[in-house]
Image (cartoon, rainbow, N blue to C red; front, side):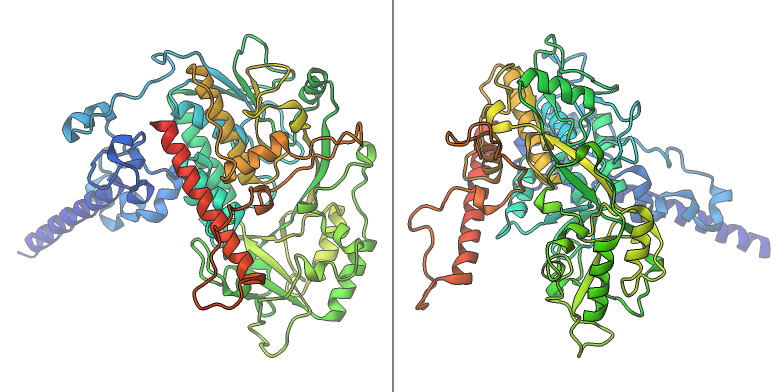
Length: 587
């Protein structure tokens, strides 16, 4: 009798284990967080963009390793002591989605089988460079139904700044900056890219880490997500090779998106073709610290002004306080420390949005207190009554929270000097660094002179440039120009005239700056005034007369209140015009 009870108890336990596994399977079959539910059902192009009533399935967007965290019962190591008895469920580890053409008959969705490289009626477009701009350009072309060959040299030859051969690797910060689409220009650009089906923004959204009001990402998960989507797309071929010259003329349509670290041979080929010297500037990388080595008895968690951002809590940064004496000693050490020699780079300017910390210190003793080390909006949790004289902030760098990067601390100090100086910061006395700061030289072309409105090289029709090499600055800006270049190239391949975004959109404002901003003036022959630029409201055209209305009951409408209203109106106009432009493109 006793053995029979054990048998029935074990039988019930096995059935319950199978039920748990099946429930976990079902939770994966419809990843609702990946859908764009606002899209009409007839416009669904991707399985992850379907409205809730459509039952088509696909694998989750994030890399396979990321699924362990979200769906623990799906994997054998979480099945408890019954796994030796029930075995591994068939297909448990490598569940594949049903083919779309089999699902359409069952669901009545009417979607045609997706084209691949062998069935497409179009010849391929070549994209050189697998960074953010190149990956986004390739994705947009492929999503338009045109085959793409993406050429990436990493895997054959590395660079001084990259650490892996992954596509869309983030070499500097892990932040995409503000995600506020109501009153921040880069937030507006985020929103427009999402409307346009950006792969880069999808990957960023699915790999975000807490960062206050900013959108920051797990850099490894982000790169893996982009790479997985690119390499699995039926219309994209990834070729690992170095292109040491301009694309051959038999590639009738091509995009060069080699970024600021363009190989010297290709840079020289560009110089020969354009007849103009490439422009350049220095860029620097901030150090990354192991979280466990930060002294939290001194530091505290808080976002500036307790601002809550995407996935944030208002306590997303680690803050290291400084007294006036500590601050002055730190500034003196920065100025006196050994720095990387310039060698042949002597005279190359810095990009003002990414100045090395020691260069800022040399510009004035109080510069850092009003820059990356400003104490405003922060209260020391260990001593609330004492206002810090300066604060060093660290931002989460990966999803696990094991790494934090030093915000605004890009540097060209020598490695030995970095550890000595940065351990002077309270709370970092015993810090261990996963990566120290570094210096690299960025290259870009004089785009207003060389490119037309669709990013095509004027001297060579069919050849486009995209990304930071065009003179935009920032991850999001680079990817957005890649997005536009990809759309323009795909339209040209289909025999259509590229549709340019309205100047009132963030897309249009940035594009117009690149292709028409800061052209050489007549009274200064030979002088180049074109400089790398982040997206900002100064690039947008002025609002129409009467666009701003004074709040009801207000006597005055000026100053900060008016400035905020102006940004909000500019943002709203941009998103409205972008939606109309995209709707016209797909009509």
